[in-house]
Length: 257
Image 1 (tube, rainbow, N blue to C red):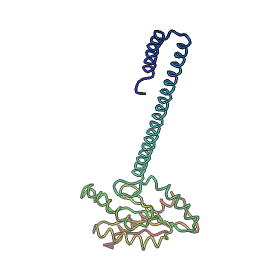
Image 2 (tube, rainbow, N blue to C red):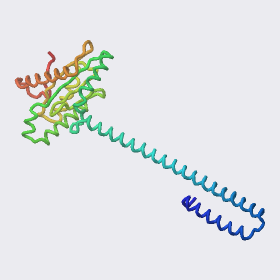
Image 3 (cartoon, rainbow, N blue to C red):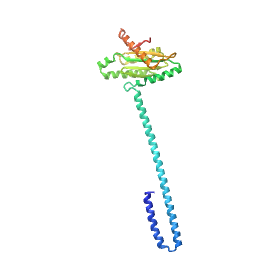
Image 4 (tube, rainbow, N blue to C red):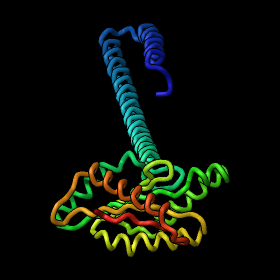
């Protein structure tokens, strides 16, 4: 319409007043004048109806356009929030230093892995390890060097892991790995030995103590119990390495009792 409705109606009323003055001045015949007044009312009503219908359609169109824009904006905002939430969840799932999974998801992941293994009647091996004399390394060479070693160990773990393996930084210099469909002996021979080779390529004087516990396929342990047993095996390996005269092994592996 181009102007506000009240301005348009004001203009129509002004125009009608002017036309009425002209009609009453020029037409003396009552019937002719009445016919002209009736025609004028119809004409103005038609014009007003046409203008307001057009105006209403325009308003409806603008509302629909605004609604579409709002919906698109809401969808875009929702997608951004979803992406940001996923990013934040990913940050909480991954240890920032090593790139391995965060320990807060260890029990949840192990519980799920055991449930799947039970359905498939498959073994699961839990590998628990830490870096020998890591405190001494930090004290002698500084924390930046210690962080460098942790990153290198994390990279080595990821390099040799299968897609289905779940690898966690347990805390400090300790790591915990969940190996689905893997027997203890396989974990020792294939996984730990490869990890030993990777660590030896990066550092000549860095060694790991490792504990391995298998559960299933005949009987499955509880997540907390399995982690505790693997931890105990790791400390047994560490204790044995301190009383052993062997030199050059990158990994000392605890034996399952």
